[in-house]
Length: 142
Picture 1 (cartoon, rainbow, N blue to C red):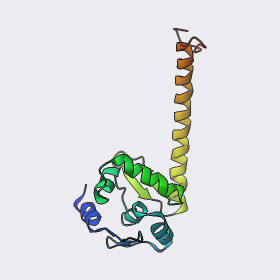
Picture 2 (tube, one colour):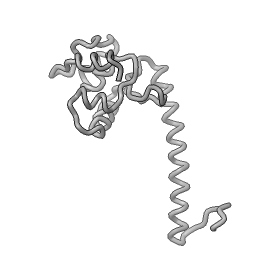
Picture 3 (cartoon, rainbow, N blue to C red):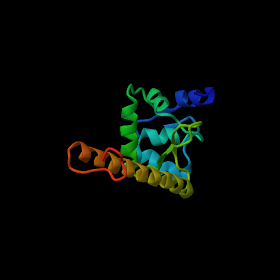
Picture 4 (cartoon, one colour):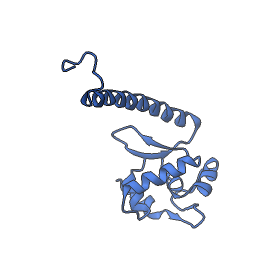
């Protein structure tokens, strides 16, 4: 983690209302998400680069990174535009700052949904073969 990011995370002071004090403040259009949707969106507004789950966990004093993903999902379900970087050099979560960023993330999700569905169907067919209920076309063992 960069020293600047660590300093900003350490300086982030989340108030009981969920607003971010310090660490750069909030963009005007993001105010709704900050005050209504919780601390992760609040923290992410302070950064121009993605923040990893472990960095968020440390900032929120949460021991389990799975708790961070649960909180992110909750905030997303309430309208916070939290995206995940697919860039291996810059992994982490970020807040979409405009419709174009959110649309690009949704496009990447569609690609992953398609790949996951394809994998699911292939493994389901394999399970059917194992159960003696089917065969995989083009597979030598079928």
